[in-house]
Length: 571
Image 1 (cartoon, rainbow, N blue to C red):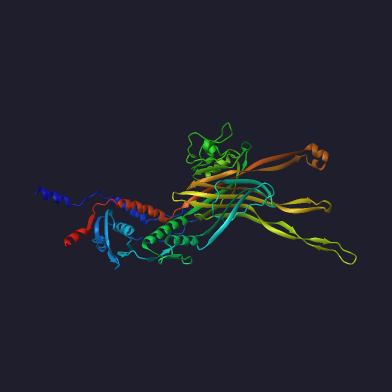
Image 2 (image 1 turned 60 degrees about the horizontal axis):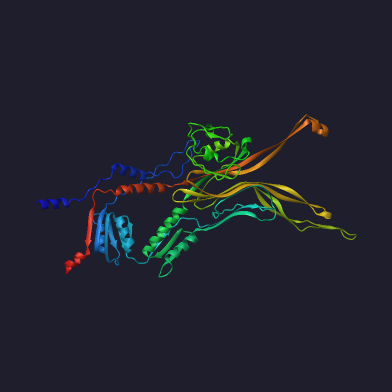
């Protein structure tokens, strides 16, 4: 009797703590409600009535977990046992056969099918409640790839020349081939090229050609294998073995996840006219030594006070600017780089403490991963860049003189603000940016060349004043990178005196006053990348949380198939 009692206790299934029903309900509600992918601003006018919500499909119930113990079991018996006492039906190809040995504990039917496919190569397909199992032979599968059938190429140059120079250009390049930064400011006269420093980035993007070549390298083209891509329809057909098709599926999933990442780029190009105490430029070291720049709920300038050095400091008891990190790369008067979290208002308040601030441009654009965004605001003016031909023939007593006009070559030069940014987004939410901002002002300047006895020749040239930088930075999602240090001197002359005294040389010298004033201006570029997360990202996180709760099952069945025992019984 005691033995029977022990056996009766052993027949009872093992029970573990069941998951909280409240958590399951919350996760199911989270899956049914998808958050908006991009926050939208509230319009001034009354919003239009929202459309009726679409009916949400009921969340499928979680699958039961079981233990699967196999020892030389027949494949067909194994697959049939997986759907026993479940809502699924099983259909197997006639060529499915063989034996299987495995021990799987606490798995669902899908996890068991996935494990057997990984090891033994038996592919499967679940269509509703119908499960179909295929033998490990060549199969054809069609993958959907939604991407533009375009080719992008471009080039972006930043040049610092030692003599006469030819200016840089901004193209639609999307390759960050350089690692470092280059900054330049000053005036250029457009002429012949000369030696000097140069940073050049170029790229060529052909998604469909690169993807097709990679897939053919993975599966090959022998023994009936092949890869056919149709960019117009957005499909790729692959004929290969089941394990190779799984590798293709994993590759395309990773590729789509990377190329479909999107980022919103917000930039501000600011010109600061420095006060007398900051003629050496904005002191970016203040960000590290005195305080950190970050998001402020109120006015950022209220948290700043002066000190004996004339530099702004953080007032006591204020933590409005304490949620960021300052990373300066140089001291005052050189190119500065700082990284801060939060919004723009705190940084703008910090810049206002250094002088009069003027926002030149405030662009905002969204772009995909590794795709360059180019923004230009300004005008294109044509200037003479080459003069060829032209002659004058003097007349004689029998003929008149002729004049042949020279041929002029006109070239368009851009005046205004240009900004091109290329983002690279990784899985951890870090954004690598290739940034190339420039502010250009082009005017016509006449050069007079002395030709000796022939006379003088006036040559109109395009003279440009350029402030630009080219750099590569890596910042977290939602942080702000501040690029500064591009300074230039602006001079002005003011005349004052007694009315009518300027008409005479003597009285003008005695009673007039001339004041030459010079002020320095510094160009600052602020860029904030924000990764746009779609509803699928939030749903995937919620499903992962629900899967972790499903692992805590209260009761599971045990499937045991021993093929060796059947052989012994037959003997």
